Length: 619
Image (cartoon, rainbow, N blue to C red; front, side, top):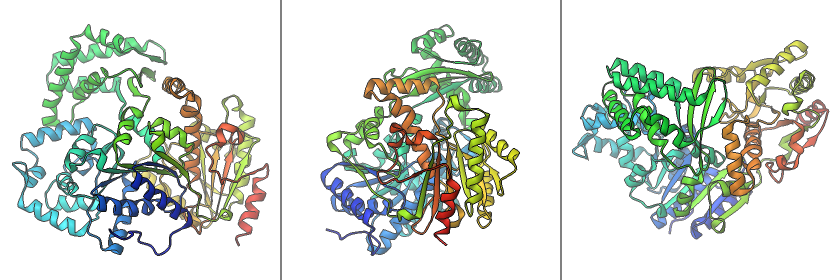
């Protein structure tokens, strides 16, 4: 038996409890739901014992994250374990096949277009990278040599493997998948297990689910991510692009079919800008007036494949994919048509993530789901279909000193719809001015929407009392624009600036601004979902299934978003910062259930006084 793989001399108190619970779950084939805040050291506390168990018992670890950028921490942790233990194991960093493809401009394709294009190029022996890598189903000599070199250097981040293979004119995906056959740990994305993409991955590693240890990082994202993976849309924009494509490739009959299909969704949408539920058979019946439904699917698929051989992608093929998916189940799904600004979207939307997650979690050897915002844990147990007798639910307390964080709640303001008026915006603006002016450094302010952000921003400008630069997050900003904005914000660290962002935008999750780069976070209101038909459908579905529709589909998701945004403050043991929740609903019963059990806050109308005293005491 191998000794501990923990690479550090000291184990933090909360970390030790978490590590022991991971060992317990591995030994007893259980599922751990872990509400574990930033600072505990979750990644190493799960990977060290899981890797030891996997090597001792011939299991494989899948460490899943919601974003590519979050793979890096797992890979760096595995490097530390390897260096400290000198153990010989293989770890592979896997991302979507499209993102590993070195063909120029391939990232512009939709996932379905890429899949079909890649299949065609390999079948017709037209892909240079694939030809250089594989011959008659076997690795070429050069590819085998490259794999040997990669094994010596691993664990490697996926970008390192990508550029190394690209320089050698080899297919990064094929080499990564060959290494995955021998891997003990695979760092991957949610969709590699919780979608149709799981089949080739599991076939490749040649391990049944019963031999898999599943680790879900940032697990609060998983239910919604699964729902989005199982949702498909047909829009008027897609149909127009498909018509243009049919014209370009001289397919008049298909163009006529698409024109008729556009008339179908226009008829379903009606005249006014609105939403409506659509029954499966109603749409199928209208489409049948164009042509036999199944014949139409086949026609669009054949045309799409031919077009992809030349153009890589096909809008016609995407229409065919939607028509095929529309034939799916009713239970756990809803069908909605939406019309806004002359754009029509027909959606086949998943309501129930347990449709796919329940069987996976039932069959894996063990699973650890961890996040700093995994409350209430009963909700995640229900939504993901976890076996109650097999699931251990634990909340771990932060290892950061409580005195390092000041939590304030302002209860005499709210962004409730019926209270949204000029006077309320002035009160919120006044509080923001007082708080921002008092914090000795950078402040991030997050609003429920761009519309509300803009109204309060202009109210603040009119007041002319703020003594800080205000930086506005741009809606639909490019990656470069987001980076430039953060760089500008960081440059103000010494004299202080205020970043006005939106929950659900670019900066409420995933940014890390430790120490002096972010002194305070202010959450204005509660980011409740718009009361769309889809939201109503989810509420109704969860009401029937759990009698908790309002909580599970409306209140808790909004509070979790707010807590994620609040988590941008205090990223290390030495940080000190203030978090301010501006809405009376934060002290209401169902809303405050999301706060950690050790959460302590001051309810006040004088936030500037508490802020000043807090930072003065640290001088």
